[in-house]
Structures are given as C-alpha cells and as structure tokens.
Length: 244
Ligand SMILES: [Zn+2]
Ligand SMILES: [Zn+2]
Image 1: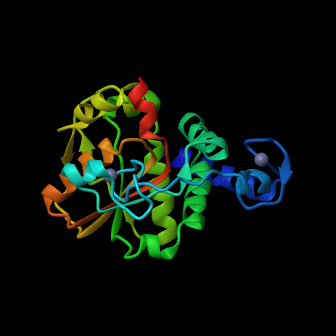
Image 2: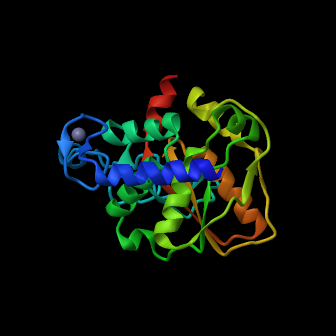
Image 3: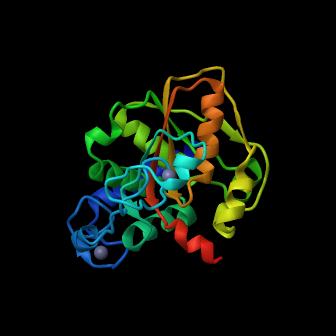
C-alpha cells in the first residue's frame, strides 16, 4: 500500500517536471492537464439532460425527463460535465487499465474546472465512490471510482467515505442492455456505516441510464441521508442501449 502511494506521488512529480506530451494525440504542450490545449478545447460537453437521471429532455424548458416524472427516483441532482468521447474517454480508460492515481487527479481537476460553483452548491459533507465487489477488486486490483473520489475529496477538503458496499458479484452494467441494467443492480448494495451524513454526493466515472447511482441513492436515503447528488465525470447516451 505504502509502495503504491510513493509510486503514485513519484508519477505525479515526474508528470509535473517533464515536458508534457498529450496522452491522447501525443503532441507536445504546456497545459497543466494530461491533454494538450487543442484536445482540451475540443472536449465534448454533455448535452442537455434530466437533472436526476441523464436521459435526454423532450423540451429545453424542462429539467426533468418523462421517465423520472413517472418513476420513483432518488437522486436529487446529477452533475455531469462531459460526453464520454475523445480525450475524456481516453483518460478514463487509461485510469481503469493503467491504475495511476495522477490520472484520477487530472480527471478530478478537469471535473472541477468545468463545473461552476453553483452546480456543487451546497457542497455535500462527504462524497461516496460507486463500490465494486471484492471479487472484482481482487481481479482488477483497483477501483478507479475510489481514486477519482479521493482526488476530489482532497481538492475540496471534504471526506471520501465508503458508506455502501456491493453485495453480489454480478455482470458489469456495460455488458447489459437498458432493460436488464435496472434489475442487475436492485438490492445489490447495503449501507455499511454507523455514520449518516445529511448530504452526500455519489462519485462515478461514467453514467448511462443512471440505474446504479439511483439504486445507491435509494440505499443512502433508506439509511437516513436527506440529499443525494451524483457527480459523474461523463455520460454515454441511454438511447444507444435500446438497440442492444
Ligand atoms: Zn492532444
Ligand atoms: Zn430523468
């Protein structure tokens, strides 16, 4: 554990002192991020979406979609700056497969850079990573969402707490169609702390239908949490799942 910590500190230090090469297009640059100025300026922002679940809105004047009007949802506010594409997709995959904390740190900086203070206000007292099952952690050795959550917590000087645990080892949501995603996550999380904060934000890397974060929000509210927001780095379109 200590070795990993020192290696990550060392990677962060090297990243800061060496001439930078964009991790996406490989050109040299002088931005403070892992992406060059051109890749940063062409990042795709998330399109207008429901404030609770990420589904597209039928009218621009709405801020809540037809699905959330007709179903019980537990997320109070979804904050999500980017579409899952280009440089952001590259960084998220790099974090997942190369397991470097400095990538999580850079993603967290990008998130905060693109989010206005109003969107994070009022700031929750703690943030909670989407958990992975211990068997998946054993095989992968890393939960990228925990890394992202911990980087955000450090920057905002708030706590990152693992308040929920994943109970069953089920297939990843990314392999499932839209309809099955909901049943795959139901009753798969349990509250795992004696501490119950009033206001929490769940941190995730990519949201699609929002089924996972909605189920975690349900468990948090059942435990007594009053407000549950979601901070997701980016979104994919739920519409693409209907064709699976
Ligand atoms: Zn670039
Ligand atoms: Zn919705």
